[in-house]
Amino acid sequence: MGAVRKAWAVARKELRQISRDPLSLIMLLGLPALLLVLYGFALNFDVRHVALAVQDRDRSAASRQLVASFVNSTYFDVVATPAAGAALERLTERRRARAVLVIPEGYGADLAAGRTGAVQLLLDGADATTAATVLGYASALISEANVDMLQRTLLMAGRQQLPSRIGYEPRVWYNPELSSTRFLVPGLIGALMMLTAVLSTALSVVREKERGTLEQIRVAPIRTVELILGKTLPYLAISLLATVIILVAARILFGVEVEGPYLDLLLATLLYLAGALGLGLLISTLADSQLLAFQGGLLFSLLPALLLSGFIFQIRSMPPALQAITHIVPARYYLVILRGIIIKGSGLGPYWDQMGYLAAFAALTLGLAALRLTRQEA
Image 1 (cartoon, one colour):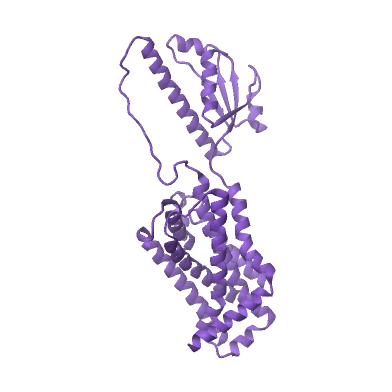
Image 2: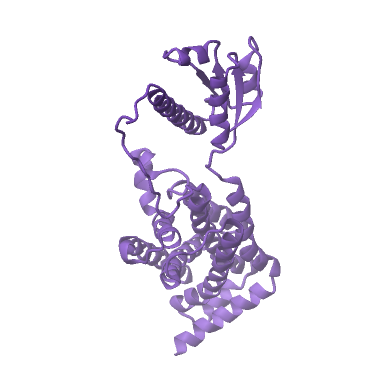
């Protein structure tokens, strides 16, 4: 009981310091929600309403039908109709259009005569990912148009029975709309929680150093474990509150709801935050100023959580050396759990391996922080 009272005394002292600095508290609670809004709306991998220029040299019913199939798909918007002989390159150079559909003269006549009607799609390949997606959309639309023309031709020829074909009915689980926002928002939550937790504890001990109050704590009859508990528990509560704010904002702004059990989400989040708080404490024992602690917190929390966790870039597509580094990034394992609970509605059953990694990371960072604080006291 004495150890609990001592840890609670340190926690009360930390809470008083937080209450005397309301700007920092507002930043810890409001900054993650603000970043969620900014990144949530800015990061979007969905490709819709592609700016399309159409050069229709044929001006037949068949060419107009082809253009209508592109527009009705909602993937393309016709933004320009350059005349024959116009410089098509300028449309993409000036970013007026991302793709140019060229329909040559005789297109409709070739189709009517049973010949192949040739069309050309010019594509801006500066953004390779978007270009590949747009190319896939266009290929699918052309294939669908070919199937429709084949069916009409057979019916006009008097064939009552159409040729056999495969009935393809895809069903997408968990994210039927294939919305990138539903995939990205959980990753943002994990990255922002890591940032909040690491920065909060990274600055706490350094603040004591700069104010000269750390020496008073060292001479007090408080053990290292009690000091760590007193320093981390207030920020654990603040980080959990920030998590709730982020989840509410994600539901209101982006429609991302937690489909799985909240208790499992809480357990995984507690382990994740414990490791993040321990990392912040470890950084604070190494830094001599709040500026250095802030820079170290950003370097070791936000950047790995954004770049090396599978949040934006697939880990399997990274070079082997980077894939090896991702194994020490806790956000990699937390994002798997978070997406499973939020998107798929599953519990912790399939993710005990990831929970084990999070527990090991928390034990490692808290242990190293305790060792550093003990050496400093000695």
